[in-house]
Amino acid sequence: MAATSTLRTRPPGKPPKTRDTLLSQDRRLGYGLITPAIVLLLAVTAFPLVYNIWNSFHYATPTIPVVNGKPAGLANYRRMFASGSAFGPAFIHTVLFTVVSVAIEMVIGLVLALALNKPFRGRGLVRAAVFIPWAVPTVVSAEIWKGMFDPQQGFVDYALKILHLPGSTTTWLANADTSWFAIFVADAWKNTPFVAIILIGGLQVIPLELYEAAKLDGASAWRQFRRLTLPLLKPALMVALIFRTLSAFLLFDVVYIMTGGGPGTSTETLAYLNYDAFLNAQDYGYGGAISISLIILALLIAGAYTRIFREKA
Image 1: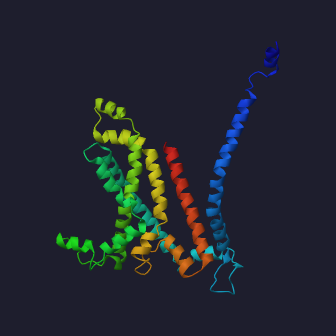
Image 2 (image 1 turned 120 degrees about the vertical axis):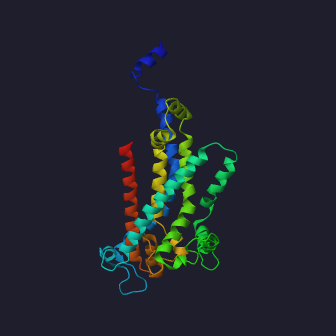
Image 3 (image 1 turned 30 degrees about the vertical axis):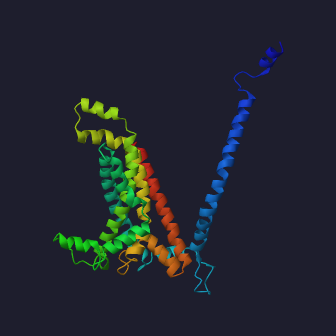
């Protein structure tokens, strides 16, 4: 009778209190486990971000004590768009580099992924060899390619001369057009394997039964690629595209090592201009404005990609 009365006093449909207690404990445990990581991320990212925002609205120039620390309003942002500012050309260089380099790397990375996804003898060894450039630090790879494009001791001019091809006497890093070509080559060599890695992961989760069914229906290899592979590979393509676009848009180290923004300012990017404002000119206000602009542009790019892919899904 006691057990019956206990069951009757519990409202119908209400789960036992022990279940609510366990869920609450799990939730508190989860929050407790992620709190240190959140605090660390905030300490690493939030302070520099807030400091840069503060700088961007002030004259933060230690070399000019008279105005250092005084409010500047939007002066630093207006300076970016003023006539004769280096921001405009650097923005154009950055956009052109991003569009061209990402297009090249996505196409070559997709071809590599499709080739390396096929079973063949020694596939593991070939994959390891292809992925080596991605494991090389960017500064090291930039130094390697800078040496390879050296007109006196570099391999590029020597190989062109041996093959009797034009350009065997080119001083690659002394001209704007050839400097950009060298930067494209160095960046593609380093980052194309990264695209291939992501796309191979996407290819491996596509069920083979779909291709077998397509073959039975008489679909050609091109039709299978267009109708099956590309649509099912869309999530991996989106990830690779977002990562590579943001990375290319923030290009700095390859330019810094190979050309130093030259000849003149012909290879300056926004990230390099930001470095120049901070470390060379010690104009932290102007550098902060460029930094905030880069963050806003990167967020806009990521948001645009996400919206485009979501609408097409």
